[in-house]
Image (cartoon, rainbow, N blue to C red):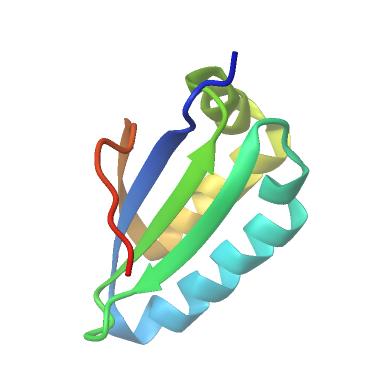
Length: 101
């Protein structure tokens, strides 16, 4: 039985002059940590044009894989660096509708 992936959306509020630094940190984290974790399927970074926020949209196999990511020692090392640059709101859910052209 295949289960639908869970979606993790993180909204990071940042000062416009720190947005590029935050994006670089998030890319490095995805490349060196997130990609290596069991249950990860995909990530996308979305930068606000006004520079005040970055959204991380990621898909995971299960809620347990998200919890394992959050408790991974390498991930825990990134959290303080991220929080130095931005505030963070996290939402875990599942896609209930999608439409593409």
